[in-house]
Length: 224
Image 1: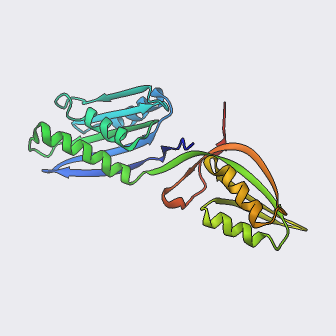
Image 2: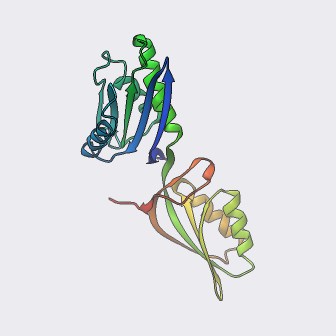
Image 3: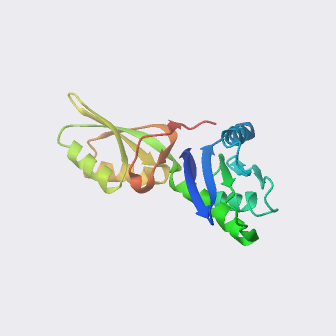
């Protein structure tokens, strides 16, 4: 069963300009409502001379806490559209603050909704989003004749290779998605004619960037 989800690993900033009004989006990870509000306060202090600092945040795996603010903009034109963009990405534990410097031309309610939404989207483009999912560490011991077969299986199945230790025998460590556990064990056993020793270690949750191009970030043991 695949229980993957999208997480915000690193925040980012983006900007959108509409009729000389500047909309600057700053997006941050936040695990608690207190952390989210601290980031909001930090941005209001940084952009003290701006007309509006609107925000939206989602806290909790089940999105238990969702809040937003129009900060003086017409009701429903800023915070709510920002929140909808975040929800559309499927992420949580995130806070977005969009700062507006007024350009002298009124945008109307529709224009404001589009501008605040666009600013958050620009900010997200500069964030690091990861697919977080469950998996198992797998330790394999084999002879030197078997390592090539194991590497072939790993690369064909797009498994994450943790490390390889060469001694009298080779110790090969992989990270296997939970839903592939039985299939990988069967395939390795067949490829090596049962000569490889397999040891399944702890279950972990880990994050991978798009296309499995992993900067090995956010690897930790599954907690109860």
